[in-house]
Length: 224
Image (tube, rainbow, N blue to C red):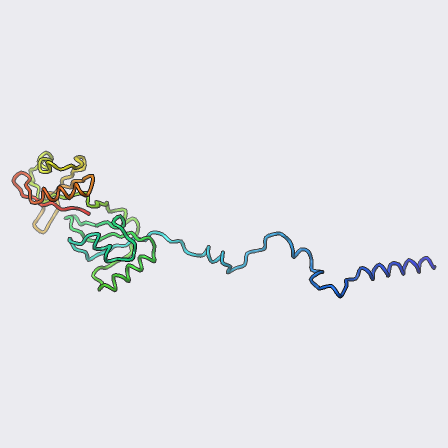
């Protein structure tokens, strides 16, 4: 019996030593799993989550109407001062008679497009700017001041006659196109000619405007 009593007393002492010391802070007994090195789940509304929700920026295209035949790309860049546009961001849209009907504009973002709307409003709304699709921008070929249009070519004129008219000018002979277009004076024959540079196109304008093709006096228009 004494052996049983001594064993019970020894077991009691072991249980006493296993009890947590009340003098130690409670954090000492926190489960180790809370200190796991595994990545915790992301918190909704965190900075990273807000960054992912930020809408991407991209090019925006606009169509500027109410321009005249005297409106230049430089005029539009000055009108939209502060929008960081250059000549490559603009294309002139021509009608069938090659009168300018609008200016296509490529903006770097929707924010800049909205700034352009405000700039036009501040300056008296002389022009009207509307948003269009990229396909509208792609439809119009850029001339960039490197092409001229000859107005008033005789109906019986041949390609050789046009080439003689352009004698002394350096141009792309494979680009010459002749066609008939309606105008306020009735249908007239035209020729579209492309040049390697703006300077060469301007030289043709200066030297050939009001010149003659056969017996017809022609006018020269630079296309932008």
